[in-house]
Length: 264
Image (cartoon, rainbow, N blue to C red; front, side):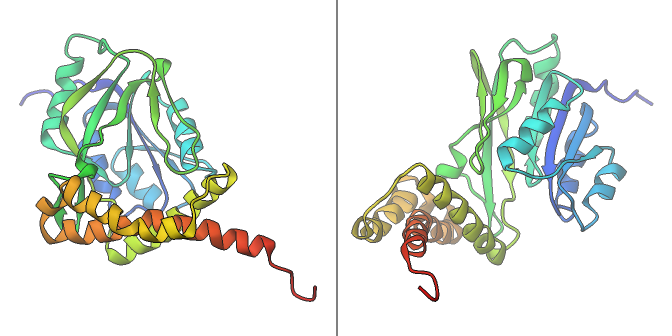
């Protein structure tokens, strides 16, 4: 019987909160491949921590402040300088899992970081087209030459120096259902609106309303979501509403701030 492959000098890092229903697929893919798999959990109540430990990951608790700060903390705890930073809903496909050993075969990779392609999985369909399948994310990097931004929501990895792109994809199971999408839609538009409001960014009410059909045309026709079938149409309709709602929320917050308090 052949010996198991030597783990790569790589730590897979995830942050979690109540992800027991989907983090298993990620861990089953990366635990056998990496020297260590580290899960930073912010207080799950659904058995996420026990599941991750059972599947071979190391689990630490850390209170959640923001996505960016949580990932910064997680990367700092890694056992190796090379880090594979994943979300609990991102499953590497076969090509990507094969590309990682090839990259490390001759020693540490020569570049500071590598972008990974992602494909959204929405209403049961893997999107092969559209903006969500054309935005590589820097998820594999040498933490000595890269850092995670501290953004409250749209964090990113910034790499110092030349970078590359690996073959294969992360299958992004971002939404469990339409109901889950709408819950996240409400949460994320609120977070983004507060961030924009703090920065003093505004748009007129007329522009906000009239821009909705333009956003839809961009998503559905220009970005090519029409090629993703009916799920692509639904996605385009919902996505076009996102920027409109976030600016409505800024307007609503300003109305509340300027409104007289009860009894005044």
